[in-house]
Image 1 (cartoon, helix red, strand yellow):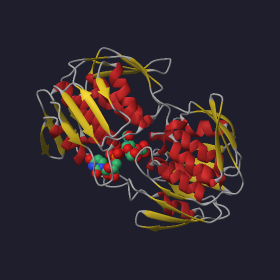
Image 2: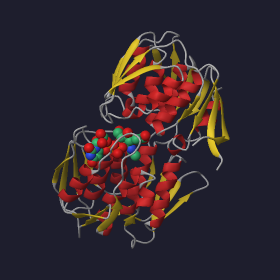
Image 3: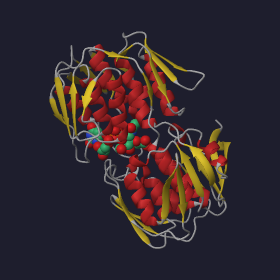
Image 4: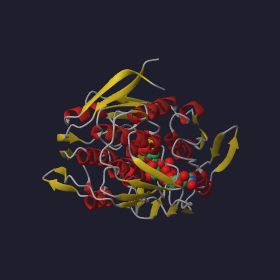
Length: 426
Ligand code: EPU
């Protein structure tokens, strides 16, 4: 099979303006939430990436009509409520399929969702999702690797969503979606505060839900009996925006972002500023410029509003070129370091000690064939290729295409030398 790969000739300064797409991680739970709605839902700014296509495939199996309109909007409408099964073949391709659990249970009274396994970035258990469903009145069994959940109607309750690594983003989404149609009031303590959770709550409220406190660790949901479809625009993708910010900085470029929310990226911008990268709002755009000298900094990932784990690999790539030593600590997914050996192949000096990586700054990276391992690690390798001397071949780019819309095209429009070719390595 001819596998696609990226060939990147490093060294071009990026310049120009790029449009940031809608957020994949907001779009996925909102698409799943359509299971809860009577009538048509129109979603604007759903990115055209493979994770969205996987979820659309699952929703179609679950009786939802999903259609990309000529204007790019996604139209979803429930046509048949018979099937309540998310099978392993789909869930293993995309863990985010777990977010159909809450809406299926709440709307159809039952859900069978294959238990997701581990993935490249760690174990990724779903115990907090299951506890939340139980608390909301579901009977849960684990049958041949499937989570089987049943409840005539979910019941309002008080539930706590903290685990050893803080709250859970998709767990909060599932709890919210299971609680909106519940009988009575639900209080979710230690809810995730990520902008994607807030976007889901705003969408549900527009459909007629009664949610308050989203964006804080305590969310209150007053159950309602019905949700109606609505028209909604997904928030801009903060992780894509952050990735382009690093692309600008790492090539010493001058790039402007369109459709970027700085209030979703405060901790990341704080680290960029400390490194010597300027991020400024200029009218409706956000401009990124940097000085030649990059300062080393220490970075620790945390739940929102802290530094996002989904930008750890990209920021580490920038720190590879800083003038001194940096320390990067991962507090959400302590094993999310598959980019480390690949960056070392390109001349980086990275040493891992448990959940921490010591980054010794080097003068330059050198092009090499490398392997993408997961979505954000792949983005980091593309960034490394953009500034490396010589040619970088990034293999297994199906990982990057899960979550970045037309990334090569967007980079080319900013003057990067990157080509998508066939004939890569597995
Ligand atoms: N956790 C548990 N038990 C659970 C659920 C999570 O212990 O039941 C732990 C996880 O193992 C992890 C921490 O809690 O240590 C946080 O995980 P979380 O549940 O918040 O992750 P998620 O909801 O499965 C979403 C994003 C990820 C992003 C994380 C953290 C989507 C589709 N995925 O995953 O995005 O890294 O939140 O912000 O929204 C990506 O886009 O590349 C990506 C991996």
